[in-house]
Image 1 (cartoon, rainbow, N blue to C red):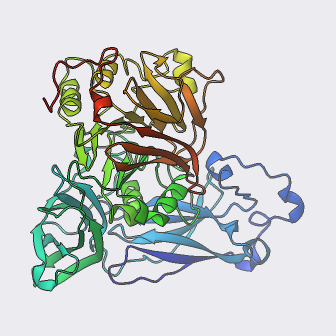
Image 2: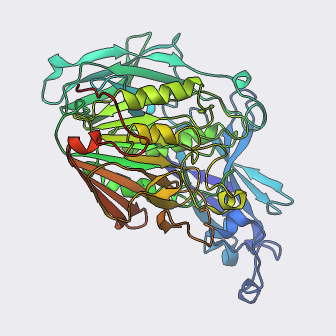
Image 3: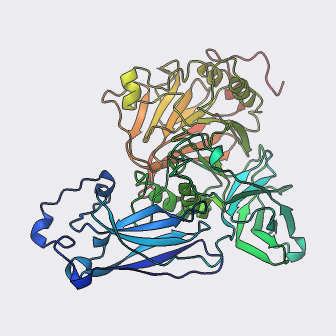
Length: 552
């Protein structure tokens, strides 16, 4: 039998459920094993091998999530029953699953026969959250202007059921100073998906997605906010309260800190197996950033977010995992590779954050000269006033610059096909400081490079005229790691096949610190500095001579 014990709190986002697995008569030879058999076991499943699971028992406990469309249960995640040390010897034991609020009931099912020949033994009673429709997983993003912050969240409330809003105001301003801003609401259905499995076995009702805007924010001021839904009877279902610090104004001379990484994914904290179980480093990256929350201001996740692979429930898993970050810091993203027919969209934009200008490109959308995106990129790069915003950053998901990843090396290109051919003259003309990319699951930094050549022999302390762009692959956010070519190109300064992220610190208009940190310990493993003044930006170098500047 399978017996589920669970607890919950009103409005809570997640609970831990303890499951007891019992076999009548203390177990059978099929479901037990002796110590002498353990040394001969070979794990046949790579997903299990990565978790170091020895499965002499063939009992598997599945967590099932209800499908609102059919009221049938679908597999969500699973654990082998011998995670419980007592099970092998006594035929009973317990394991723990972590559940998050996904708006519908859960149940546990006990199977024998392993993954190859599963046979259902028992199913638990449904497990429900006390308020399954409650608003959850807020994520902030800087708006179109520096004095605007968007907050997006998920709930089970349609516009016909409740009025959705965010209540917000300056910290210390008193309750009389709080404003309520209505939220827009959207959802999508199977028909919005491009094909299988998102339209079939991967489909799950996404709930309703709400977005509200908090405008006319004062730079650097701390604000309070709380998401809510007013029901037709006048009662309000609240989310948790949070605070955030408003973005700095463009050009403001103050300490500004930025996090950049890609390809993080998500993972189950309880060790469960799931559909796409190949992002082992994602929890380390998340947890390290949560611990350091007070020491950075904005996050850029440059593509490949949950690796949903057509399974809609994975988006809730991802937004729940990053909530401790995204609910308090602007969490900006770049367009990523569309896999297994998830929802398709375009995403290219610019962000002005203090002394930084970020130009975020969409590497799934044509960037070649003459295209609309090329025009956008040039407009973004050309319109920044480098006297006030000296640090010009380009970012995209696929490697449009340089990478010595092995599959690029086999193609002989060290880049995405036609990646830099059109864009490198823009990077050089407008003197881009750093270009970031993900997609390749490791870390690599180049020298300041133009047309495949290092423009300086310096490796750690750059000063004076900008004569080339530094290209950085920061795709080690959490997914399975990528390999390099054995031969190291001359332009490759530092490589690390590990999980990590980049931190940029602008001290003022003339001094920038770059740090690469590993997710495992948060320590710095690569770094460089840039020191220069505005005259260095104006200096004329090869393929980078302006007849006029913004200040003239």
